[in-house]
Image (cartoon, rainbow, N blue to C red):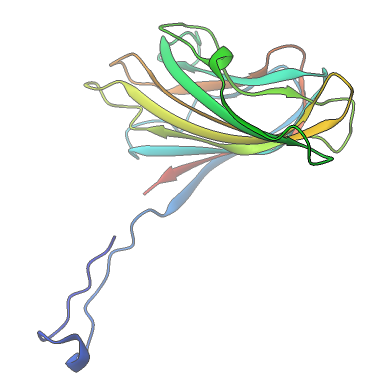
Amino acid sequence: MALIKLNNRAVKDATAVGTTTQLGNLVFISKQTASSSSSVSFTSGINSTYKEYIFYFNNIHPATDDTHFQFNFSTDSGSNYNVTKTTTAFASEQQEDGTNASLFYAGSFDLAQSTSYQSLAPAIDADTNDSCASGYLHLFEPSSDTFVKHFISAVHISQSSTDNSLYSSTYRTAGYGNTTSAIDAIDFKMSSGNIDAGEITLFGVA
């Protein structure tokens, strides 16, 4: 939060306001559009320029029904996506007819010192053309050579059920990449099949 310096002690008597510093601005870095893509990788733009980076997901639609939207980190510019992670997740959901509303710990999403891809959203419906996932992944200080690499994510989806009805579902995932090496690339993909459509946009936080 920026501080405003007044030219006297009383706010009510102020006649001038000094300069302010704008913090928290989003700086566009790059955008990628998926079109029957096996994965979407960002191998540049993640460096020590900013201490925070945010990936925004817009209308991610899978080619294969009921597949998970996932990611993994790299410390070697994308040659390998296998950073060890420990994570946790919870979800809230409700069916279109207003039934089966719930809030629950999503233990099946957790990773415990695993190099596997982390799921951000499960069971996205591909059979329904207007079904998709949107949300964000917030990564903190990926270039640190001292600390682990924390992240938080929120993704909302149209989730299919066994009787082909749809749920409104929000999944929140958080954790850390357990490495003091700089994270310099990230890969997004479905757990099976391609990303049929969607955009992922990368911003730095100034």
